[in-house]
Structures are given as C-alpha cells and as structure tokens.
View 1 (spheres, rainbow, N blue to C red):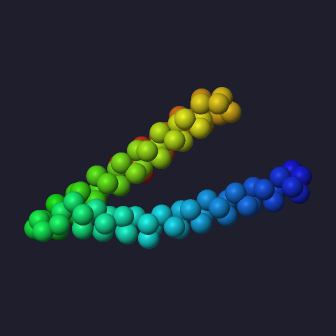
View 2 (spheres, rainbow, N blue to C red; view 1 turned 135 degrees about the vertical axis):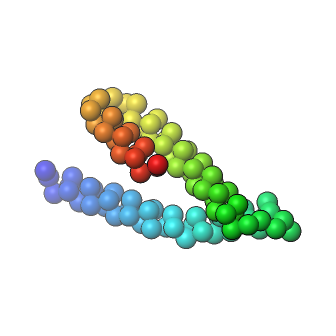
Length: 94
C-alpha cells in the first residue's frame, strides 16, 4: 500500500468516526424536536414515546441502508461480502 493510499484511508476513517460521533447528539436533538412539534400538548406514556423514537430511528437506519445498497451496486463487492454485510446489518437491527 502506498503512503498516499494509507493517508487517504486514515482520513476517510477519521471522517466516518466524526460522522458517527455526531449522529448521537443529532439524534437526540431531532427526536426532541419531533416530540415538541408533533406531540405538542399531547400526553403520552414513556413507552409510547420510546416506541415512536424507535420508529424514527428505524426510518433513519432504513434510509442509510438504502444509500449503502445503492452505493454497492457498482459491482465492487463480491456476493459473499454483500451477504455478510446484510446479515450483520439485520442482526444489529434486530
């Protein structure tokens, strides 16, 4: 591996870590905004709020999965890699 390739890989990995770390506060802020706007004045149990936040998170991961699927259609991945990634994603999703 060339030095340039290694530096690029480290840079991209760093960007992924920053994006992943940013997603935690962004999710909290967006979930609170949904609670405030959609359920303004509505009294819900904590279970109902958690279920709605879970659905919100499911949409977020579903969209991310579709984006990843679209990016993997270029033929750069073998069938085994796609199957393994899909199984890991389903396992973590459950």
